[in-house]
Amino acid sequence: MSSTTVCMPRKSAAFLNRKARWIKASVLIWAASMGLTLAARGEQQPQPTPGSAQVQSQSTSKDKRSVPLRITVTGKTEYILDTGGLNPAEYKKKVEKAAESGRPLPTPAVEVTVEITNISDKPVEIWTSGDPVRLVLKLEGTGALNLTPPLAFTREFRIPRAETLAPGKSIAFRVTELTSGFRGRSHFAYWTDSGAYKLTATLSTGIKPAPLGSQEGMDGFGIVQLQSEPLAITVKLKK
Image 1: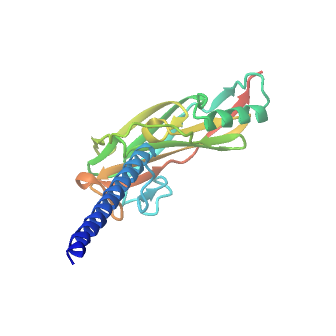
Image 2: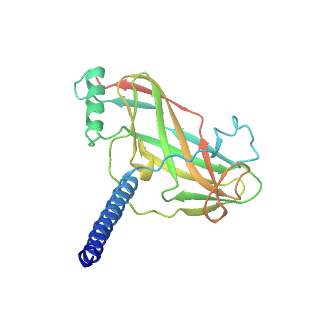
Image 3: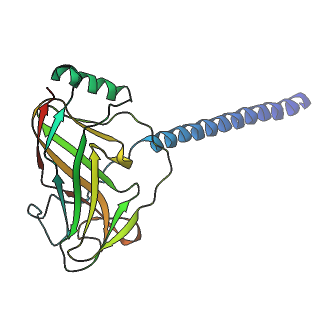
């Protein structure tokens, strides 16, 4: 009887020790997996927020009153492409391979201005920098490439900064290359052959007062997406 009384607590203690070790291991595994998930998320580029109010331009907006801004793209429209002696197909493959390796080739040099204008009769605050602000330059055409190479970004969040646009006033962004996107370095656009192209600018940002139907951002700003009319561009091969 005494042996039974002694053995039972030992078995219970051993069982409890094993259970405690199992729980501790499970917690450690969960914590490690969460850490890896957060690290991976930190390296990913933020995606456009579903449900954002979208405006293509002043002339194509479904509701001009909801988003009081217009975005336009202007600038040089004729460029020369130097493929380094490669034919267009070879050059295109070279550009794609470089992007896949995470070492993209320099994008074409351009002389373009993206301008945001307040088309309302009241002041508007707009985010002009920070991680929530993203300007994407997209090319369309026979030899167009729009690539997102696997690049790493630091994990800190860069708070958006706002400027106030008075009625009729504009903010201009000078563009010298077709590299854009998250922090200006996630979207790479190329022309790989001669011909006609169209360049479109899309700006994801926040404005205040928040437009009707826009997703709520921080400090009373509403998340919106502005899209320009395309700029027609002609590209010729270097002789």
